[in-house]
Image (cartoon, rainbow, N blue to C red; front, side, top):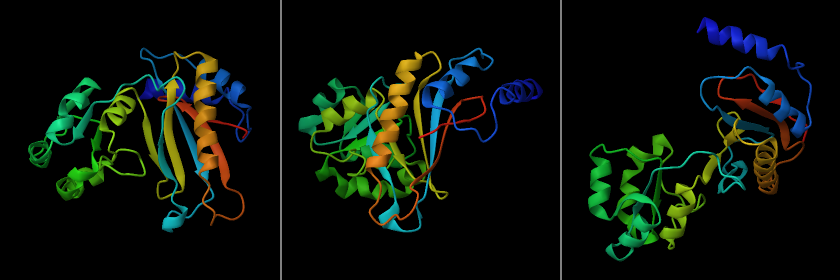
Length: 226
């Protein structure tokens, strides 16, 4: 911890507090921080002028970034027997119907994303207490409940990400790795920002995007001018 804290303080001194940096400069700052022994994720956080207590101001969805996130997902698929082979061919680590739901209900959680066909929600819906707290419950809004499960499995296995505002009105997302080129990080970050802007709820008044920050897994955040 002392070593990490010393590194963090050193990196923080390279950033002007409260200064808003153009996206390309913010990325340069990130890449200029002291290197670690692993390839850090680049995370983007947007603080929005929404009230998450109101359902009509909840911002959520899913997006495939232009250059992926640098991480693949383990995907399972709840589907009928006729779609099992296609789901597995698309990259699902497990696929099936009620027997797969029972396996998850009994405690098996070795996956990152769950996809479901609409007809399976009659029994997948019962897994809400298991999957809900972990953010793994299939949802039509996120594109994880769909008739075309093979397509959804392929997208999520390749790194498609889900997002939703938290209690503080923030939206977080990984937008790459520090090993990505500056252009790749910039295009991923801009794609995510543009997507959130497009999703502005009509009931939100005043400033919508209040703050945007980029950070590495072990770095300070750098404020981005939007």
